[in-house]
Length: 344
Ligand code: TXA
Ligand code: MG
Image 1: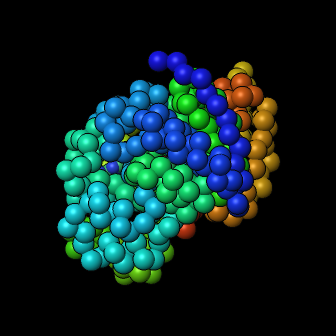
Image 2 (image 1 turned 90 degrees about the horizontal axis):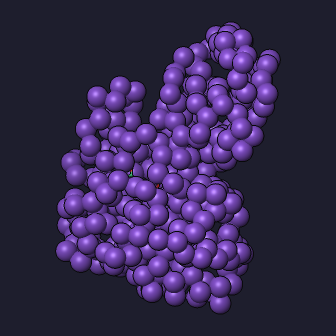
């Protein structure tokens, strides 16, 4: 179904109440609003309205077995949609909320099964972004919001990315500028004694270990081999984050990466090639070269945008150099491994 997409620019520091009210009214009515969060842009609908949530799946072309994250504005709101909340998860809430952490909890009956893809759990997060929080408060309902990209594309970190993917499929796009973190939230479950990370993201493993001592990491996060995918976080099994261009992830020591980049350039000389690097400077022969950043945080902030820019430049094959698995590098590498059709 085609809709008219309206773009509303909202000040991320002091969101204008009358503009927030327009976005909130759209959610209340059962329509779709894309809005910024501190991680990536989300495609929001009333999480308790099955018909509205259905529109999210249709707009994204998202498989119906992949559950959505429900965004709320307070702990009281969490209690309305989740039950049997474990003590250890409350520790995570007090340390990392509002912020880029999504917690899996037992769901209450009131949450329709389409929102959780039939699971008896619900993924919940209180975002930090002011615009997001104000829209949730004004709408007066929890907001289900996956990343606001077409299924399998890189997640959007600018309103223009949402427009590229969802023009005529979303009623309102709230433009609140660039997302400060740039990769999605960390998804964590407290279903056993030691918490388990189902998706690395904006809260790092190091930050979680500082609070919990030890955390487990689900095999689907570390396993490059798709066979390891046990669908605990169902979304992790799909092809993800991929631009139109083929992505080749280049790993190794600094010298090895330089050699592999040289080989990549000569092997693909007939194609329009792009290279995205970070941290280290390399000698590169390519049609387009982009530098993702000097720190893990900068690389996280930029990586999805740069993949999209390569598509806009009609690059057909992109080499991306690996970063260390530490800090936010872990989440970045997780996304790159999923985006890559080849890892060398
Ligand atoms: O940062 C983010 O998390 C962004 C912003 C908009 O908040 N949202 C986002 O949503 O990344 P999405 O739908 O692209 O990713 C949600 C992830 C998927 O991997 C999904 O399978 C998992 O969370 N998930 C959702 N509900 C779950 C549940 N009940 N149990 C396990 N995993 C769940
Ligand atoms: Mg997503």
